[in-house]
Length: 281
Image 1 (cartoon, helix red, strand yellow):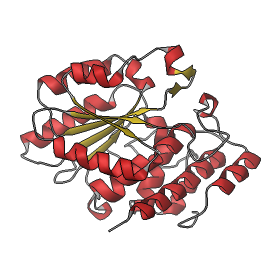
Image 2 (cartoon, helix red, strand yellow; image 1 turned 120 degrees about the horizontal axis):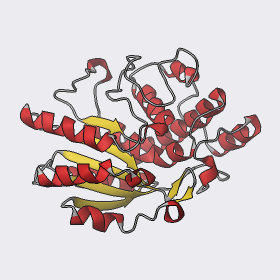
Image 3 (cartoon, helix red, strand yellow; image 1 turned 120 degrees about the vertical axis):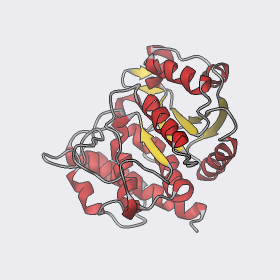
Image 4 (tube, helix red, strand yellow; image 1 turned 45 degrees about the horizontal axis):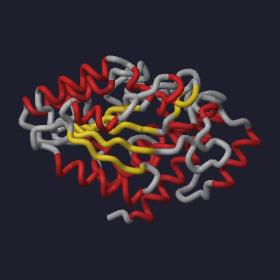
């Protein structure tokens, strides 16, 4: 049984992976992945606990995760590798020619753990609803999780999906909104103000929880609480506040690090702030 301290150590190593992967590829997105590392580590290592050796595309008999904001791919790849879906040495191929670790997750390469090509923002929640309905039709009581970005909510398809999920009582679904208040062009409040996100989901008929996503204890506790609210007639959403670039001081809360890779000197500085815990790939 992994402790909170164990999970925190894994999250630090995942952040090291993210920085090194994006630097090694000279492209990618470091800011959002660093902010969401605690959440995805907790989800895989403490909450879902899938069996990497039994991966199937249909996901029957297990909890499922879909990454809607696919530009957080470096985070997902690191978590999948650290969990055992594939060897960590493959992380060095991130965004390289012929790699299975595309800049945005893709299914065509057959990478274990990936069930949906994502990165075209606004689609992940709809896919997750479909997967959740499939589980209901097959009397599979496992849950479906989906991660979205707050800026991604500017895509109208999300609001149609929100209406559908509540209207059809898709109550085996837990959506998580990464609310770091930042998107590629700047603060969300300046690009497209989103208003009161929890109140909007509540008005659409969802059960709403909130959490601070850069505190491992709170993340684990809130995910367990969200599980308790499932299968009671409402879809569940967790509105998660995070800091873009968490763990690296010069990236923290800076929209310029949404999709810019750190150079070698910046990478050295970032890694000095993130103590190696499991061994670099």
